[in-house]
Length: 287
Image 1 (cartoon, rainbow, N blue to C red):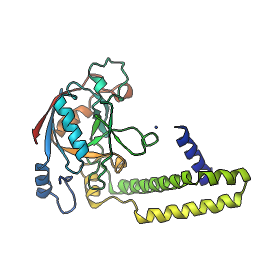
Image 2: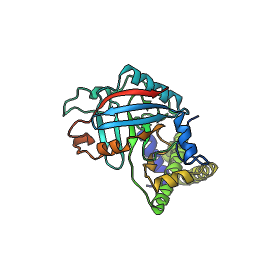
Image 3: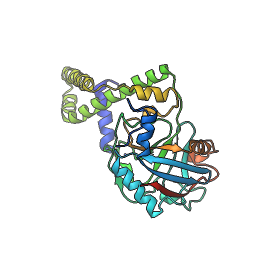
Image 4: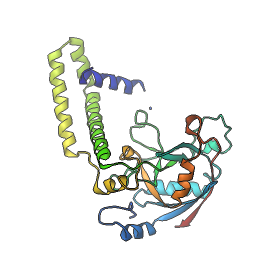
């Protein structure tokens, strides 16, 4: 299938369809990063397997304030960790999970609203311990708005420099595909006219033009991991393939051992723990 045809398929599918910084920021490593996290509002998450403390970033104020609101309302008290994938992440915040039976399908519960994306990338990224907002997919949520309540904490994996280089190339290719598909959507009418006329020369010229525009657009802002990302992903680990697509709004500062306990529990259908693991309560430690 050539690029124009792939573009048409993608467009058809779319028309048919879903002052606080991250530790490790350049120039702020070690003590400096820790001191900046000291200024963040912190929340203690008491779970059935132990306690976790997260710091909430100031550069994602809507997510921070929404999280604090829900904590104050007791929204999270009793919710399950309903999706747990080892070496990836643990997810919670579904309000429908509090009294869920073993066969309940979870993952859609929320307070009835979404939060605008606050993707502060590459400053905030998916290193181990990152606190990020869950959301529905780009096909139904192109603005990448976050769930009003569901969040996940990254456990992830450690990557070799070679693996990270390969992933960087794949993500660069994905970015080019996103640019090309957007251009294809914008030129869909012209594509369909040329196809109707069976104008192969015109289609080839348009394809070449879209490819050239894609390359030029990508060159203005190419994808590359920062030195801080490379350091984190090759030492503590994380989930780099999620970078730039989800709002990271905090990080774990105490209790990653508890998160590791959660990620290691036995799971069943839909990655739900066989034995319930839940949030007992949350409390604000510093505000």
